Amino acid sequence: MTGLYNGDCLDIIKDISNNSIDLILTDPPYGVNFKNNFYDDSLSNILEQMPLWYKEWYRILKEDSYLILFVGVKTIHYWIQEGIKAGFNYKNIIATRSFYNGSPSPKNNFGFQFQPILVFSKGKGKPLNEVDFIPTSKEWLKDKRNKNPKPFTYAYPNFWDTKICFATEKRASKNLHPNEKNIKLLEILIKLTTKENDLVLDCFAGAGSTGIACKNTNRNFIGIEINNFYYNIMNERLLNN
Image 1 (spheres, rainbow, N blue to C red):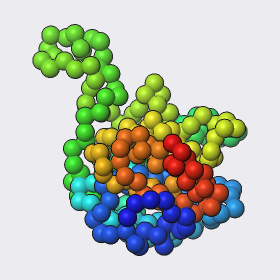
Image 2 (cartoon, rainbow, N blue to C red; image 1 turned 180 degrees about the vertical axis):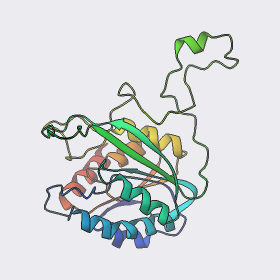
Image 3 (cartoon, rainbow, N blue to C red; image 1 turned 45 degrees about the vertical axis):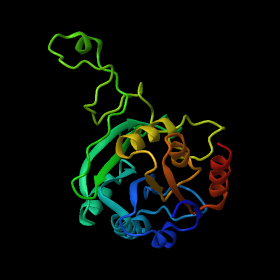
């Protein structure tokens, strides 16, 4: 099963075979009452759906493969707890930064430019691939103690500086989706955790950025989007890209 699907992911995902997906990379609703006309983003609804999503994700993911979720700062604990409860191995949080989203600064809190990305594995998790995106420092590259100098480091930190990439696309009128993720970041995550021709699922696919990243890195893709408007954008992007 590959391709693009318009509908509720819980309905469509039932047709995906057990242990068939190499990576799930998705940006689910956060449960923060995001204003829209096509799904209920109340915390109560997301908490009701969450165990159902995790159950299906665990069923379809291959052993030692990864589940990577963009999540909200204020609901991150729910995602961690529910993932562990579903049987996933909670691996880490990748810290990235989003562009300023135009929200007013709170008077009694810090801002929300931090974009956490949760990393789970089904089982122990396979070794990450060597991917050239973090340059080795000039000092270490020339250091005599470095017996195997390489221009890039393969000991990956869990904080990614904005020099590597932002988590989101810069908010502008040209954005295809209000929560559009950075294709460069998606490509890195895909290359780290899969090999060419592997199958990647995004069950909250929006305007299809994960699909574009898969196409750019020669991976197969399943994209599920509930909103017909964004589904059509995704379909057109992937046909014409």
